[in-house]
Image (cartoon, rainbow, N blue to C red; front, top):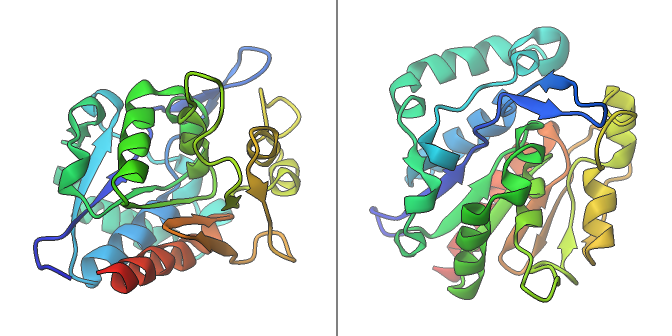
Length: 237
């Protein structure tokens, strides 16, 4: 690894998820997914840039900072976010991102990407350029919704035929957000031709590496996803 190697983390700029009935579900990025991934990259010696659509300061889903939903580590995640508040307050504008500057592009989840990144033209550009230039692409939980943006003019999906995972339909049902959802991530990836897989048990760590594409199923898979990205980078350095 070159000491100047930099990884780009893309976060949703959304603070809500528009439901089928038009109601707004408060959301954003999931703290565990961002914190665990960011922390691992920094500890591994990489520089990390953040970007959002429009350069908007991202919103952490309040549930991810509540021990009832985010688990016993939620206070640590909150403290970590406080420690990098200045960085979070000034993300790069996604439209201005120069993909050539990065060795990897990684998208954490939370339901936010299902509101904006899944149909964001700048997200699509970044993914097409990253894939074309051989960068590592990583994503976890609802982050793979961002991958849905990468559709060619003929309607084909950039990641069709690739092994992928992400938040399962079963987990969406168990979380209570499936019934009024405009679409479900796992089903949508299958519809577009992705070879979707999930772990043997819901909520347990599960990640897949397919070439230079690394995806994780749920928040518990954040560390596996980050480790997968780092392993591919080490292997291809």
